[in-house]
Amino acid sequence: MQNQTTTLTVKERLAIPPQKMPELSPEIRSKTMDEVALGYSAEEAKKEALRCLNCKKPGCIDGCPVRIDIPGFILRIAAGDFQSAIDKIKETSLLPAVCGRVCPQETQCQKKCVVGISLKDIEKSVAIGRLERFAADWERENGTIKVPHVKAETGKRVAVVGSGPASLVVAADVRREGHSVTIFEAFHKLGGVMRYGIPEFRLPNSIVDKEIETLKKMGVEFKTDFVVGRTRKLADLLKKDGFDAVFLGTGAGLPIFMGIPGEDLNGVFSANEFLTRANLMRAYEKNFADTPIWEGKQVAVLGGGNVAMDAARVSIRLGAEKVRIIYRRTAAEMPARAEEVHHAMEEGVEFCYLQNPSEILGDESGFVRALKIDRYKLGEPDERGRPRPVKLEGESFELPIDTVLVAIGNSSNPLLSQGTPELKTNKWGNIELSNPETNATYMERVFAGGDIVLGAATVILAMGEGRRAAAGINGMLVGH
Image (cartoon, rainbow, N blue to C red; front, side, top):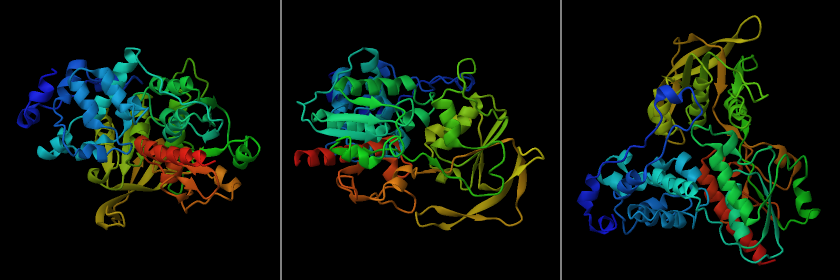
């Protein structure tokens, strides 16, 4: 294998077929929360890695928000040196097992892969995310996880609010420099959106726990059930508690509703609440969990993103007889990952395109009985370049259902900004930055990043924000 990494020609590498990821069958996985994708074997990983052309100007690195040396770690996998591969990844990312599972590589690093471009099919790009996952899983399963080096203590103290991906990156990068780090988490469990927003069949909680364990071994302190803005004011962390800097990574957890009649009926939920009950509180474990969860039989999920796919697929696992995704554009415009859409279809989810509800109808007892659905066609592009949906008059109909899960997006929780006038926010409630190069806010010594700045985004984009904010914090602390 070592010789093959250097002797195979470009033509020979392009001729190697993409390695399919083993996964649970739809019949089995639709009845369990077990992880769907099973991961590559060592031989599958090495064969997939041999497809990499090791380009002199690798576009894949440019497509990675945290700029992992992608050809570098793939070359090591091809040679069978898995420990060296994960070490290379961890030079820039401490969450490879997470990113390898949930990041949209097809629109980032893999979109710029020369293999996919050469074959005129991006789906045939080197499976960078799956190889990243393989390396991370190999390290964990073989017990060789290394704790990053921490420099001598500086006496500086940094508070990190929230424990999602942006916050964990900040904690790691700041702690490496020898500064004390305390993470404050509002929930009783750590991980932020990785725990409450992503189902176990996509990202097992044990994976999140293992990544956090590394931070604990680095000396990062964690305080749960601590709501900054209520348990403690943001300004008090700086003025009374003596922190030298604060990072805000509280995410975008406030659900957006459609504002149509009937949203107050029994049986209507935000997908955010529904998934939090299932993922964080494990409400599906009937014999162990005290948290109730609504088990609809005829479920309509409004939206076309990954959250909509997650809500639909959890509903299937809770025993729904029929689950429909209602989306006002077509499959081509749907923002969810192609893999998640494919898995949802395999599990029996029905996709209703060019449709949107204008009213939720209830029965005499105040429970959902149907949706009034309008049909649409695609019109001229909007300001973002997507075809604008145009309602077709006289094309409405009723769809009998008993559950509505609204998954059209989230905004930032206003708790922090309302109690801290020094913070500036935009019209969506996202925190504005005074310096986008360092992620500094308009409040002195306070930085922010992730969904609270970007709006609802991806794990890897939040990590990129965290990396930039950590560099800003470290740079500021050196000057103090």
